[in-house]
Length: 197
Image (cartoon, rainbow, N blue to C red; front, side, top):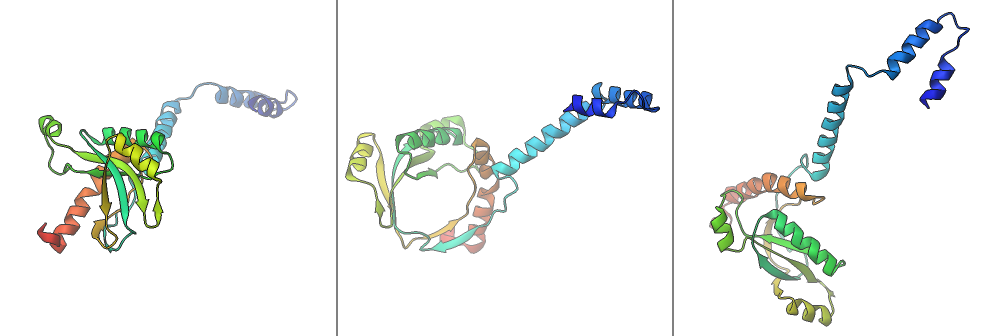
């Protein structure tokens, strides 16, 4: 494209060809603004990645009654941080790709724990949704999950909850979510004195 443009632009019969030649030389030679252009492109990329990961999402906390139909899920307790939870979810996706995945976090990001405390107690449970409303997996899947060491629990359809939603596109989404959603949730609960929190 540049060759076509430059050959089209340069005409030896043109009295201004010397100026044109100088202009062409300026285009092809490295310029002083290139480091700034690279830095600008990198900054735009970082902002786009953060936006895609959910940094600029509005956090809406709400109370819900009868939010969803009765839900049964298979889960396994585990230890570690959010990265380990993500790894487990990816493993379950490979195990049963069509089943929705679920994570329940037990540790409080507002009160950091030592590594010794994290090793001593479960910090999260990850699993698969096996029943929701009228949908239910086959008995074979229940048996297979029990053999793999999964426990089962049910969230009734008439429960009251305080909830929010956040995107999960990558690991950065989990980090951003841990920084953005817990404080608004706790503040919402404390203001309304729900269950003497």
